[in-house]
Image (cartoon, rainbow, N blue to C red; front, side, top):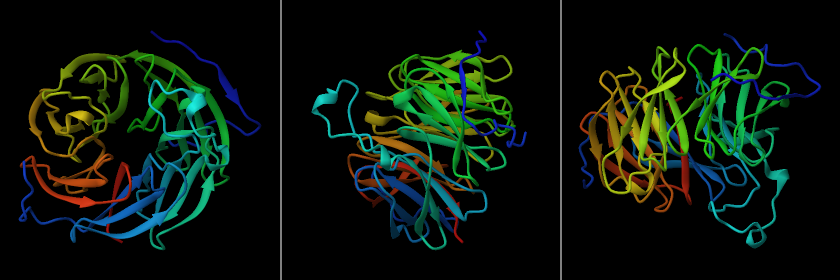
Length: 349
C-alpha cells in the first residue's frame, strides 16, 4: 500500500541536500574503540574504553539523553535530548512533572574535547534519529507530535516536518541514502520517507509495536524489532513488505534494539525484559544463538568495527554489558551512569 502523507514545509527549502552466563576474564583481543553510552536519568554520556574495559570520561549533555549517533570520521557525536518527563504507556499526564520544551534538541559533542558544544533544533521530544548519507541532515522522530523532523546540521534549523504514524520511534537511513525508515509503534507500521522530496511514499505493516530497524549492508533486507509481538520482522526492501517474522526464544522476550554485524551475516537483537541478546543468521533468518544473563533490561546495542564485541545498555542496573559476538558469551559488565539507554561506537582517536 502506498500513501502520501501531509508534508509541512517550513520557510527553508526541502530535502535536496541529501546525497543519494557469568563473565569471564579472557575474551578475544579488542579493537581500540570507544563506546558512547547515553544515560537517560543522569543526563550524561559515559565514554567507555573497550580495551581497558572502563569508563574514561563522563560528558554532561542535558535532560533525558537517548538516541546517539557518531559521524564516520569519529569526531562528533549527536545525542537526542528531551524535556518531556519519563512516563510509562499508561501514565496520567496530570501526575507527571511539567514539560520543559527548552530542553528539547540534538546535542552536539566534540569527541576529542569530550564536551557538549551546541544544541540543534529538533522538533518536539526527540528520541531517535538518523543521519543522511552525506551526514548533512538529521532525520528525527518527534514522538509526542507524530512527526519526523528534517534538520540541517550546518544551519541548525528544521527544514521540514513530515507527518507520520502515531508514536514514531526508530529512525534509520537506507544504505542508498534515498529513503529513511521510521517505526510507528501504535500503528505497527513503518513509514518510508523519500529523502529527495521529504514525503512519505510507503507504509509497511509490521507485527505489534515496532521499535528499531537495521539494514543489511546491501540494503536488500531490513530487520525490525517488534516489542509486544516478541518478533524480529524481516522486510524485503524491493517488495516493501514483511516476508518473515522470527519469533524470539526465551522467557518474556521483548525485542528492542538491533544491530547487524559489519559483514551483514548476523543480526543481534536485545530482548528488553527478557534480559538476553538473540543472534540471527541473515542468510537463513534462523536464530543462531542466544546470550543470556545480559542484564535486567538491555535496550540499546552496538557492535565494534571488527565485529568482535557487542555492547548493550542496561537501564535498570546502570551498566553496560560486553559480549563476545562470535562465542555469544558475556565478557564483562561495566558500570555507567543512571539508566543507560543508547550506545554508539567509534574507533579510538
